[in-house]
Image 1 (cartoon, rainbow, N blue to C red):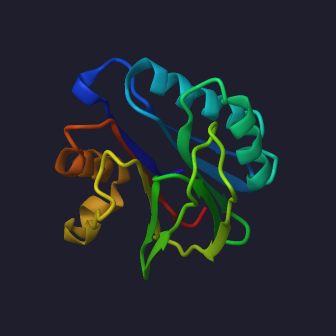
Image 2 (image 1 turned 60 degrees about the vertical axis):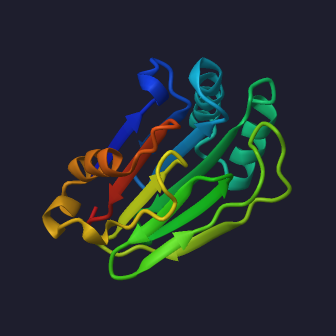
Image 3 (image 1 turned 90 degrees about the vertical axis):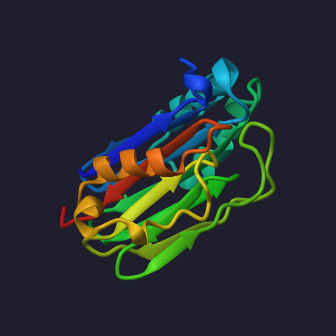
Length: 192
């Protein structure tokens, strides 16, 4: 599995409200990006509670995962959250998101996957999911609002884009805001 991640906390705080995780089984890869509201230990607590809930419910449909997280983390500040499930057998990607997490597919074409309004743990009205085809060589980028939503990787050379860890590190150096936590996760879809 070809995944790169990079994280920066506000003022180099040991606690970061931006968290990402991924899980893989025989048929799928699940990618997750969570941004706890605010900064510091309370934001980190909310994000980690959401990730813990997701990890215990990976076999559930996306709607159920989000509903369970919304109920389970009500005692926290809440989070923005996006989940991507890559179906290895059908070469598709299914995405659901609440809040301001950016998800982009970059390859033969560029596609932005939108999230719905709300806060996981604070209530949201609906969750729309999108399923799209994923080709070999496609990059899936997920990032929090600590990096500009207008991020464009077309300026990075082709060789850097093949090394997703170096690309994640470079994007964080080039585009992380000084006023927020920032995290990026990049998945390179290749013939599994």
